[in-house]
Image 1 (tube, rainbow, N blue to C red):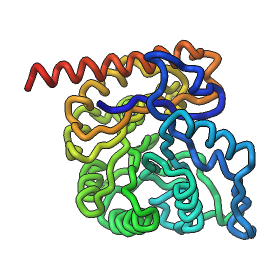
Image 2 (spheres, one colour; image 1 turned 45 degrees about the vertical axis):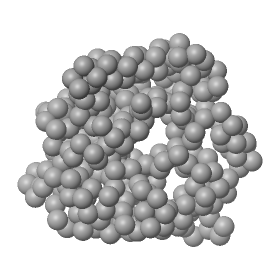
Image 3 (cartoon, rainbow, N blue to C red; image 1 turned 30 degrees about the horizontal axis):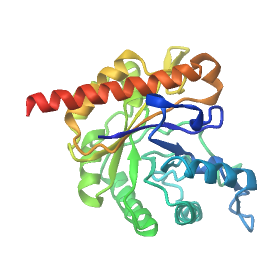
Length: 295
């Protein structure tokens, strides 16, 4: 059965969760554990002693996975191979259970800085040109890491008109050509449903059943008429409904991870996080029972 875990952000120590609320795994964001002085600095990367101690402590209690934020694998302007090599070094040192990133572009060309970060995911023009770019980079990443990569579907805050492929067509070909697996973020799908009218059930049904390895769940909020993936609380009912559909469709699922941002912990509460984990476990048990009956 898939493991149930949480994203680590320091506001809540996973060891404090016990019983049925104890996570099976913890996902860390590598970029929050190292310092990056920029591409013109030597040495560029440094891991503070305090960060290393946190990871070593977590490793004593949980399998640790990595969920990167900085690779920007779909950026056309440049591909940061130093960043990739640092991720590889981290993996060799820590032995991540799995590694995921985002099928997205965050970095963009800008006169003021060679490392300009857009702050949000840039909408993707799904099509053959982008596909060739991403295929080559996925192959390179998986070759350097020496292991498969998971890529997360993104939030699209604005539509891209006249794309030559749908997002799911793009994903299917990318999976077929590279073997890359999907991190299916159900809250991102929910956000795209609210903002752009995307049908999340049809979207999932268009993805190859064997392509999905991990699922993320979360909550968000509305800002000036746009719904954002802000990780602001417990999963809403619609996301849990989508999870039921995903559990029935994707048989190779390895893990489900609850994402919450540390700034919202006072609203969620430790017991809220614990109850979220228990809820996810209950849904997994129900799905397993349904599959037995169907079988």
